[in-house]
Length: 294
Image 1 (cartoon, helix red, strand yellow):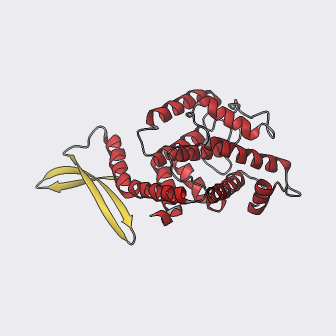
Image 2 (spheres, one colour):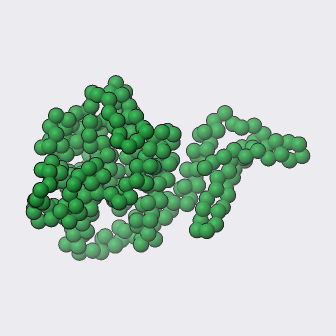
Image 3 (cartoon, rainbow, N blue to C red):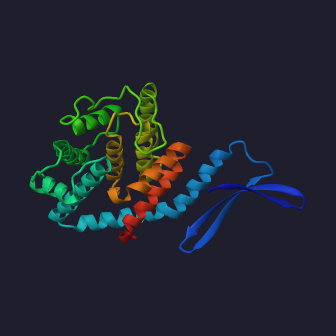
């Protein structure tokens, strides 16, 4: 957490920004001098201060991960690359669907998507949505155009057209709540301008900020808008991996077993309107997931 520190030297008051960073068992403090008065744009300075720290601490490691991952990927036989992608598609589909209430196990999802074996005594909706998610995931990997509102609507339609045609590809016109969360999504009248702002933000920043930061913030911003009656989490996680894949970074799966920390990170950011909380959570998880490439 960034705090403003006041120091008194020879009866003169000076202000600093201070932030503590944990490295292993040790805690290091970083600070910058603000001046004799607290600047009027202190919040902007705080954000830049933290961005600089995170860039130094994390983004160098993330770029090493990308470099070594890409090197390994290029040397893999084609069949091995296809198998690795298939394994990720199955795991990603299982976890993202399970987070949203699907009853399919990981084994049932693998049997369905690999071998076409439909699980017995499971809702047909869960089966159809798993198949649709896998197909959409592979389609997104080949998608060469940029992100737009129409693209997102098309993705949502493809995901739900067979199971929920009444909401597929349609912006919601009613208020919704998120089960177990204190965050209340925007009202229907707020959605269209917020989506327009989201696409503008994405196009403005897609070449300016680090790809992992872009992917994390796109996820957070979209799921916070919550434009659909259902499927917002699934679409936001697809957007995240669309960005990572497009930029050549390993894609990221949020596991069902780790959903509580994921929910908490999202909710803290949404309630406090502080993007950095979710960004910090995702970056740490990403580096831990791909530590073998460091």
